[in-house]
Image 1 (cartoon, rainbow, N blue to C red):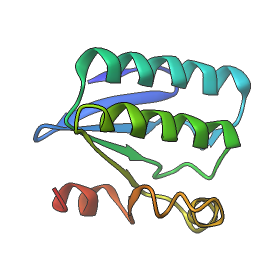
Image 2 (image 1 turned 30 degrees about the horizontal axis):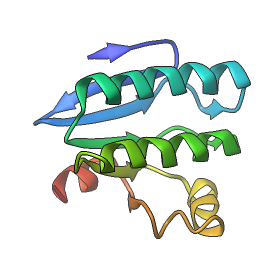
Image 3 (image 1 turned 90 degrees about the vertical axis):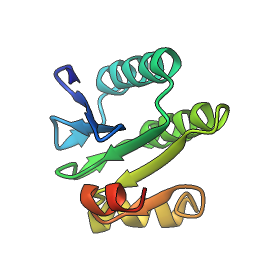
Image 4 (image 1 turned 45 degrees about the vertical axis):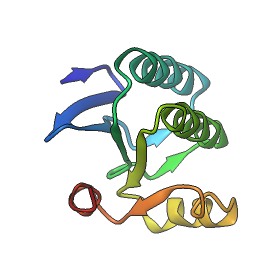
Length: 117
């Protein structure tokens, strides 16, 4: 397990699960810290399977969407699988409005994402 004040990275049966210690990801400092941690992790570890679990997160800024697209692209460069789980209805609407629900594999919770692998 790797963790910071915002982000936890755990391995469950060979799947990296990124979860959050906050309910809101909107401060510029928070998003920058998250960006640095996730990008460094993906670039150095190159996880084959990554779930970003938003359970408990009620809000995130639009910068978070850019980070998710970047992480998805980085994993795609080497054939990694990228999934998102645990979005509440409000966050789910953001993915639909931006059409990112067509780009990302979305699951209602972490267990369903793990079961899909």
